[in-house]
Image (cartoon, rainbow, N blue to C red; front, side, top):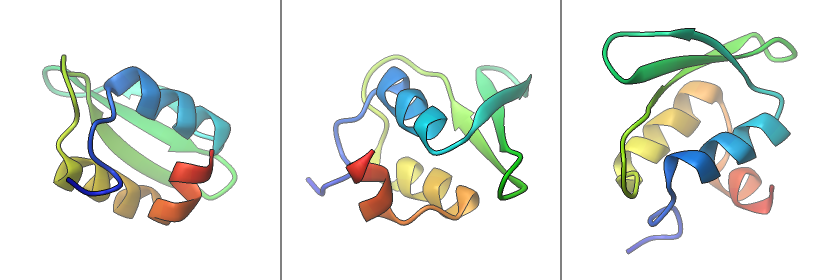
Amino acid sequence: MGRLSGFKYRQIIKKLKKLGFAFDRQAAGSHEIWYNSTTNKYTTIPNHAGDMPEGTLRAILRQANIEPGEFLDK
C-alpha cells in the first residue's frame, strides 16, 4: 500500500476544497466534475463507498495538476 491508499471520498473532497476546488456538476452515474477557477482545471471524482483505489486517486490528482505531496499536506 502506497501513501495515497486508504482515502475515502469525503476525505478526498475535503482536501480538494482546501486546494481551491468546488463542485461543478454531476457527470454520468456516480461521478462528479469538480473545478478550480484559479488554475482553470477540472477533475472527475467517482462517488463510491469504501476506499478509493490508489491508481484512481493518482489519476484524479494528475487531472487536477496536484502533486501527491501537496495533496497529503492539506
